[in-house]
Structure formats: C-alpha cells, structure tokens
Image 1 (cartoon, rainbow, N blue to C red):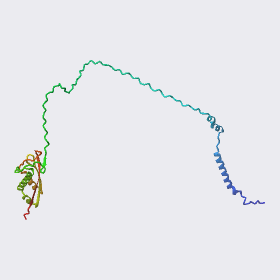
Image 2 (image 1 turned 60 degrees about the vertical axis):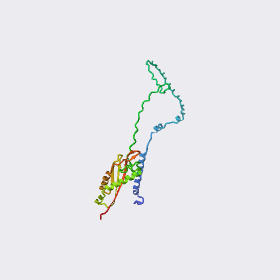
Image 3 (image 1 turned 90 degrees about the horizontal axis):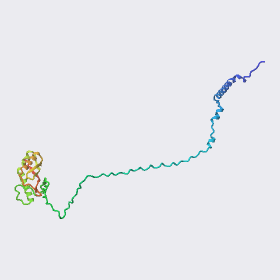
Image 4 (image 1 turned 30 degrees about the vertical axis):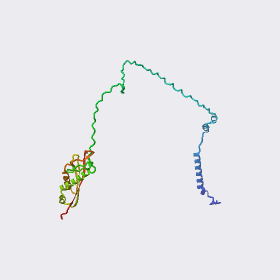
Length: 247
C-alpha cells in the first residue's frame, strides 16, 4: 500500500523557524546568566549599624564659665626726687642799674654842639617843554622884555628869522622836490643855554642834515628856569617853505 504524503504537512518547511526560535532562546538564557549576581548574606547583616539607642541619649548642656578679668597691674612706685643742695662759695657782684631820671638837685651837663645836617638837594629836573616853563630862555636881544609871554614871543620870532636867513631853500630844488615842504625840528636848550640834542624829520635826508646844521648854529642863550633853578627846555621848530617850479 502506497503511503501518500500531504504536501501541506511538511516539517522541513518549519525547520528554519525552529532554528531561529532556539537561537533566540539560547541568547536570552546566556544574557540572563551573565546578568545574574549573587551576594553573601552574612556580610549584608554586618554592614548595617544600629544607631537608634545612641540618638536617644541626652546630650549634656555645658555651662559657660565666667572667668574674671585679670587684676590691674600695680601702679609704678615713684622714686622721690632728691634735691641736692650745693653750697655757694662764690661772691657775685650785683650790677646796680641807676635811674636815668634827673631830680631837682642833679646838675645839668653842658649841651654838646649839634651838627648841622646839610639839606639834600632836590632832584634835578631833566627837561621842561617850552610851553609850560616858568621862566623861558632868553634869546640874545630879548633881555628888555619884562614878562614871560613877551620873552616867548620874542624868542620864537628871533629863532624863525635866524633859520630863514641861514637855511638853504634852493637845496630842495636841487633834489628835485616840488611844492610845499615841511621839516620838523626838535632840540633842547640845556641848563647852560646851549642848543643840544637836535633832531629833524624831512622828505629827504639832506634836508634833515641842513636843518640840524642851521639849528646847531643858534647863539648861546640865557637858560630857562623852573622853581628858580636852571633847567633844560624842549623846543619844537617847524620849518615850512615852498619850492617854486622854474618851468
């Protein structure tokens, strides 16, 4: 009799599944074996310490001791100062200061001659402008004028005439100058009556030098006075002339 196999019942088809399930089971058992730990029961009991009785004991309260401060140090014993008496065997003469006040019975000494102190001369006045001088210098020929104003006018006119006669007006034409020319001159009549410190300002240096030469040739005068003493007097002189064009 021939045995017929059911194709649906084939154990070989399940062999792969059984193999995988068995492999998974073995892996699970191996992992459990590795993770499995054992402990010694006897050592576990000794590791726990019983502190229950000790915590219930009362802690004694200590009292703070009040220590008294140390006693203050004793005051220093002062040694009494011994004063030594030294015998004074030296005789010292005392100086008696006599009173400088004179009484009725004292004699008056002769008065010593008093030296006369020479008076210091007042500081010399350097120079005074001609317009404010108390006593103007006197130009030769103006001695007969009685008052100060008359002497001023006489002196001014005399100096002007002197310069007009002495000054070379043709010099301006030689220098090629034309029209009206002005030369400002300033000088001082010192306390001896001499003309000094002549200065001039003109359109040309040769005109300045001509004005200086003319003013330096003025005659000697009687010096002016301030507070009754001879002083220097400043004098300003303008020289004006017009150059006529020959053409």
